[in-house]
Length: 145
Image (cartoon, rainbow, N blue to C red; front, side, top):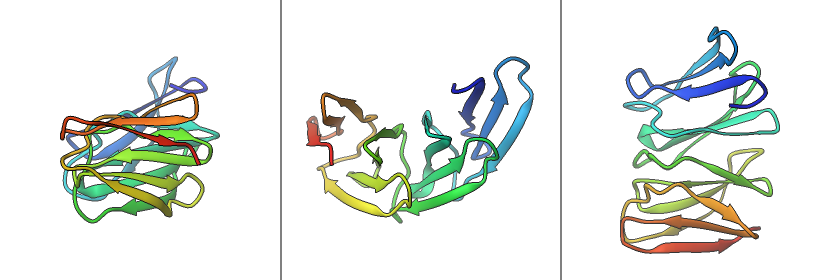
């Protein structure tokens, strides 16, 4: 929830919804691409909602209108990892075994890191470091850019 709005994804229909926190009224919805739905919690900052979904897609949506600002696909697999945002970079873990760092402004991939298995863990940011776990049994740490 941010600024009186609840943002929630639907695994059944693949949509992200914005609801008025006081009334429950639908403010907007956005239909994602790919097969399946939005299974993670969004990150909301600076008037932008960042989401990920099946099919290897990530999106930045205008928090007020639901309009797409950018989309990115890794071309492989979706994620159950919620995004994390720090210093203008949005971090995702994906089923392709990679940790992806995207520009929060443009969605361009800044870097990716291969682990040995699915990355279903959501990233956490603390003290200038991004931490994220992989199904390979390791926790990875990266300095913020």
